[in-house]
Amino acid sequence: MKKSTTIPLLLILVLSMTLLAACDDNRTEELPNIAASQSTLPVPPVCKPVDDGQTDRGPGKALIVYFTKVGSISSSEDADAVSGASLRVGDTSKAGTTEVIAGMVQAAVGGDLFRIETVEPYPEDYQSTVKQATEERRAGDKPSLKTKVNKMDDYDVVYLGYPIWGMSLPAPLVSFLSEYDFSGKTIIPFCTHAGYGPGQTVSAIRELVPGAAVLDGFEIERTKVSNAEEAVSAWLREIRNETRADAK
Image (spheres, rainbow, N blue to C red):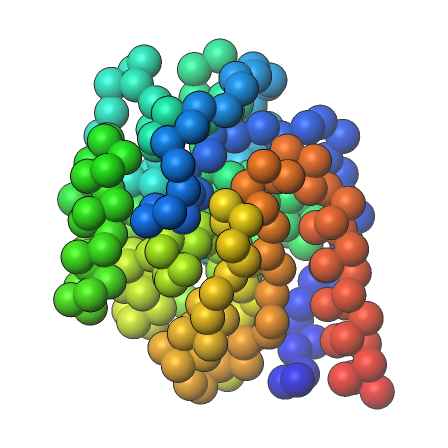
């Protein structure tokens, strides 16, 4: 594995609260439209993404990037974000399961949290989103993105989070990976899914960023996200140990 001494080694998981979020991270072609239970908890500060359209931070920091449909949808205040299956963070706000994992990663390693958002929002209706996602995948479409990373060169390590859509990468993630030069960087994927696993998404990422070192990453079923702190901690600990071994 490519050496990356810039991966933060402070893997102290300080999440004492349980992070619950909206399950936007569905496998869009095969996940049934079944509602999950609702819950309300305080909004965790680690889940607040950069929302000014760009991030411009200091050199050497890790960047935690994620895509979630909740962040790219136009919906009414009371509408469910995706397919009737959601959990809430706070009284009204929602976040995708991938966003929850991204918050856990940031709490453990530091760095900047960045949400990929599309210029054109996805449909509120679940089946309409399935149709659009399928068409995007078959046509190789790359939707335009509203949020941009300023000074990507400042980051040596990119944690990359996404839901599994049709056993594939969501098209906005393909757009993101196509917009920047990741040569010499270490990319660490993590994904949420409905029980079918990550598919060939890590291989797809490697094809999109041939100049980067792409680790095998982390995957978790969306129903287990609310209690994922220990699993995320163990995964990050393994990355730390591998990095130390490579540095010897």
